[in-house]
Image (cartoon, rainbow, N blue to C red; front, side, top):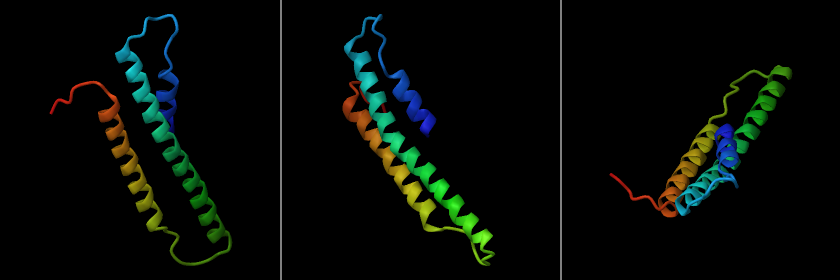
Length: 102
């Protein structure tokens, strides 16, 4: 997710040597909005992965028996990802000047 966000932000910057049209500038804006929406989500996923690694390592090193699964956090991350993708769809539909083809 972070690679996609970084790629969108990196390639959405226009080249000064080419003639830009309004449609091209609008596409750049949509790409930047999508990148800025996905970037915090990817950072949240990475922070959660680091926390889960530390949590499980501490349980293993302390020789604690029991279940090492965390049930609610992956569901929460899935819901956050779903809402961010829905926000991207709304951003694309509102900012983009393309007609909607169903």
